Length: 145
Image (cartoon, rainbow, N blue to C red; front, side, top):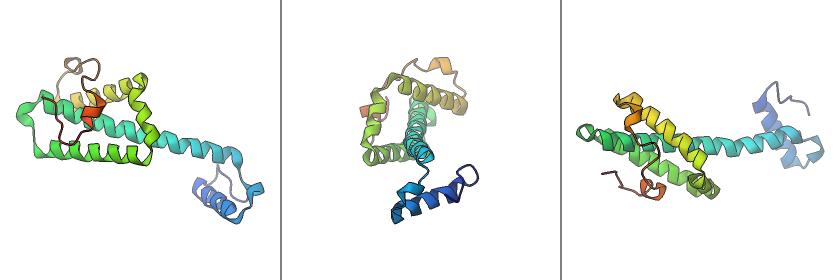
């Protein structure tokens, strides 16, 4: 190993990939490789959570500010929905997050905070738990009444 993980992670990653391609498995930094592989999954989970929070925040805005509904909100809802579905297509195991109560609580909490920030509506006005089924939220064209 010539590049230190702590010194330059990008150069280190490129070097590790080269070692794998050349079959130089004895030169691999296995401990840091394992950490990086685990982090890929965590990164995908964070992206899913972020996209879901934005989607849910806009659905809250849609429901709680009907007089302000606009094309921009519709486009954000549509875009986030498509990006979530794409993430689920690329990594189907992420679907298990929707059954994880702790994950759902965190995402819903972030969505409520974002909606409060963007609307001025007090966070306590919004439901304590998400009132919508995730299967409905992800259906193209679905909007809360």
